Image (cartoon, rainbow, N blue to C red; front, side):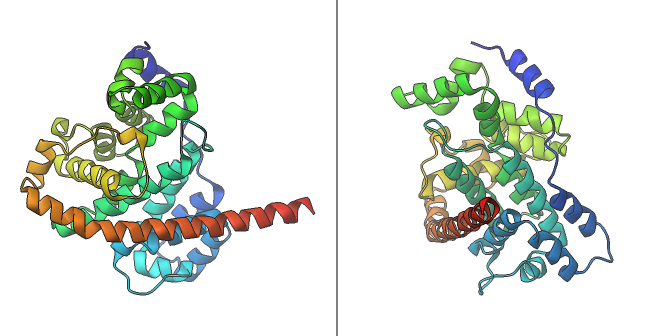
Length: 302
């Protein structure tokens, strides 16, 4: 078994901060410029088809509560606002930089769907519970499981052993990680977040999303991400092996005043249809995006 120290050292030394795509970097610069118009920003984002599709996925989430379909980037910018757009673009870029293709031990689409679901659920839950936490909720929800991507990409053999153990035994995925690595994907994600110099409250949310009782800096945010993660695992029509055996943490429920089981079940019931609609939209847009990329490949080969 590898030691946590050796894993942490490897994470912090061999993994470099992925460079944001040129379009994403320009978007961030434009957002920070008060003279930038929504039209100019929209034209810049539209030059990257993959980024455009993913921004539209998020903008069309029912958790933003917009009654009409958002079909253009310009409209999405108006609905979401500049700050939310910057957070979304950065998050998408970082998640995409770590993603690899699916294999027998990793479902890339399932991972993305779960990340999106956790982000929008965290945002909706924060709003429903009247927590005044901005777009950081969505960002934390989207990035909370990035340690899974790190393990799949840089610790392939160990990751396969973890998945096999979780599939073949009664151990939870976290227990399987501990048995092989002496650490969990939450630890790994936290170490990478530190390496990337992400804000401390995001590092804490990523590191402790399975143990919210350990949070000291912003326990409300960590509790929100934890509960959104469990919600997403329970109600999304996507099997996520890395959340096998995960249940609500009592400390998180107490922090959010959700200890009443009937109230908790009511939230689950209310969110179920909403998140399924969101997953359906994600699937549809992914198909559209894949079709566009296939077309581009055919043009390039002609």
